[in-house]
Length: 498
Image (cartoon, rainbow, N blue to C red; front, side):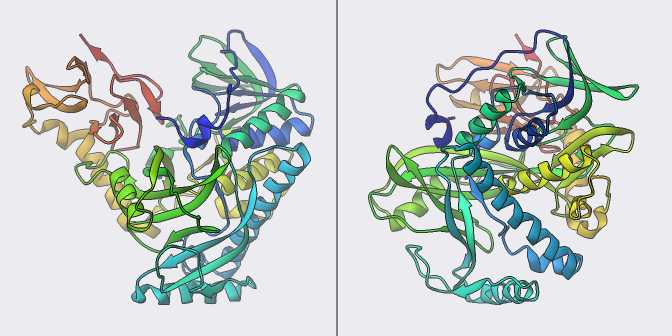
């Protein structure tokens, strides 16, 4: 599954696997946009930086929509209600600063990444939702931010209203990350790929990162930038986060395209932006807020997006389709800062709730300030040690139910699927000798069997017939059809049955 961004980069740089023990100032685990941004800032401050990644660069970032915006849905009325006006104002300010920071980096380093300033809109086609836009606008006015409410937009269908944030941006996120990597290496930073961090231990005033290659990195500071924190204890982030999957299609519409960026108010979510492809503009439509590991028996989301597009662009051609997974905290705010009070020199940034292009820069600046022992006035917004779960009781209840079912109850239920029922290029869990077995029947009708228990905390996996993956409903780990780990927090592959 390649995204538009991956195919837009010819000859993607290959890096070595960690094959020796090293010592450094900063070890960053994860070479996506957050990890790379941390590496960029710190290497320019004179720190010796080493980044490692389980795959190649930008594993998750390569599958985003590449929007850079402080408009995170109708979020400021939520912040004002859940916290207060000062909290909402600071959240807006720090995200607006992040947009400018990214633009400054692109200009300074001359990174060719299709960066473009555009307006961003939250829109609705439902009259009953217009009041929600008006409420958000009122909060923004109280924050001294002018957000215009209008019906004059370039969408190919009528709306009841749209709330505009001016001077937002979009880019090619993979080209941007390659630009960051280039400058990190120029500053004598090191990048290692196909290297999995499996543990971190304290060593006096340092930390030791152990890799699956049998090698280790001793560092004064460690930043965990793996999207989902891979260490369960301390921190207990698995109890504070869930993962959600979105689906994206890239289309040649054969028509003049919309201006600016759009996302609607409520489910089903549709997000729009244009992008460059072989010298022309194409359309990206994203949708979905499907909790990873849940029932995939509904209509194929790629087909839903393509059918939606054909209503307005009947001659459109699908060029790419891909999915993206992101972490969402129970109170909708990222965790940024110290990983735990028990690991004082280890830092984390996670829970970017599908707005990671902007929030990654926010997180990088906060953590760089912590390492440099500088006070950041926005750090309190994202306190990584908070545990205020009960503000969102429904989310807590859902997480408890999902974990209970997958850890215990579903393991006790008998499967009603037999081997003969499984179609080609599909999978399911069957029972053999009172033992659950995950079966994938490939396109050549060959059978592949795995142990369908997540290697993270032992939850029963579900088969995702859309992406052809084994997904964990507890904490969102994903594996390919053959059992290879794709996404954390798990980092081990599934057991293969012969």
